Image (cartoon, rainbow, N blue to C red; front, top):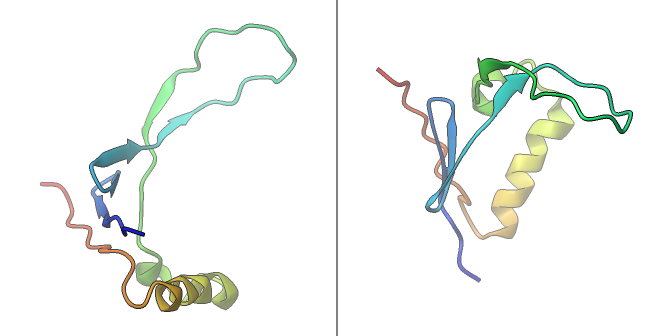
Amino acid sequence: MATLAVRTLGDRLHIGDLEITFERTLRIPDDGNTYPLPPGLGAFPIRKVEDYAERVPKELYDRKSDGDEESGGDAADTTSPEPE
């Protein structure tokens, strides 16, 4: 099975050739009615867990290590240079 490179660049997540961004919005009721799209509140920031290791629960942080072992090494390139 082929492994795709996973990278972050600013607020974008790249998986192979796929680029994903997450946008902040307001929640709308889930009542079956149709509503206009909520206003966009900007990009949702993507951060590396390693940068917040002291604040992330150990159980969650250790899950990344488990995934690396299963794939036989580093499963992802998580370099994230800040945009200029």
